[in-house]
Image 1 (cartoon, rainbow, N blue to C red):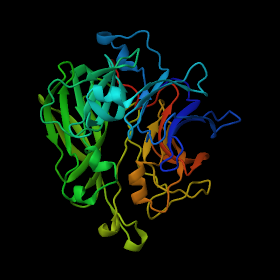
Image 2 (image 1 turned 180 degrees about the vertical axis):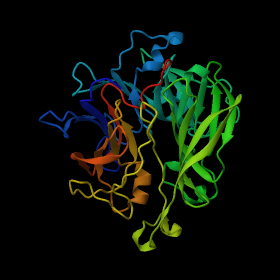
Image 3 (image 1 turned 90 degrees about the horizontal axis):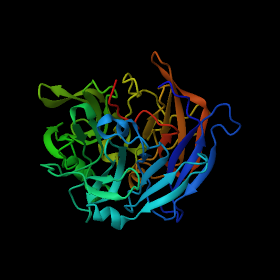
Length: 420
């Protein structure tokens, strides 16, 4: 948290149905720079239709733990999955951080040989780089986790030895001190690639279970069902302090009242438990103001698709209005915002929160059928609480959609720790 303020941000942007490749853009975050709040470089991918999604740094504090020390790792490479094409790009941010370059491409065939497809979330772990995948090698269930070598980035193979009842996959994290991994659930590729399917929500077919694993033995130990009404249990954010054995999970929507929610998981004796601690209600709206996908509901669900926990474990920033289906709350610059805040990233010191607005191309098209322009915005956080939209920092990507942002040097969701 005492590290210098980030000077650059890396933002994955998408160009669906345009014939143009996706790209990794570099944004100047230094308020003393002449190019502050501007894209200073764009690295195009070599292929079209990748759907760049979640990505992360190759090195982290977990890899330096004494039990699995990798002392020669450097936080230098971005590991960038292609959710649609099942590739993984390795991007080197050195020697010039403003002009990163692709140094390795792991093709879909290599990912499938490791047992999976549709790579999604990346975390640097104690013994390898972990990548969750939403589909098995043939695209059917079960999804799970594959491993990449820390140094060569070559796929090692599937992580699980005993997966128990786990089938659906999404996010994962761990409590290193307890040798415990947690995984969450979304759906199989055919349940999300063509858009959100109302019948699957109503039928409660999406994921709603948290899984707890013996990390060393790579074996499933416990499933905690949040309730079938809580559809799409997605982002996991464990406490950063390794002596605190709890964390938060964001749930997209409830079939009971269309609310979104945050669950807390925690130790209950020798077992794990979870309970809802935050509920965000849906907002009624006239059908004429809603896209066809939401008109049968007569309301706008909050759709909690990302959460982030500050590095001191104090804040889950959550209470400003930007964009939206009906309100379309403008940016302080006066810019009209299509879409709403989607991916969230917090700086290491907890003072700045960066927001992008694209969820997944086919889902964007459903909720914003008139089009979605990508943007990057910033919230300033008071250390004692309270926050406001920064009026000087805003990037309009136009028809290019912005998905996730990572901060130079690391951010609040890059690392887990062995010592408090």
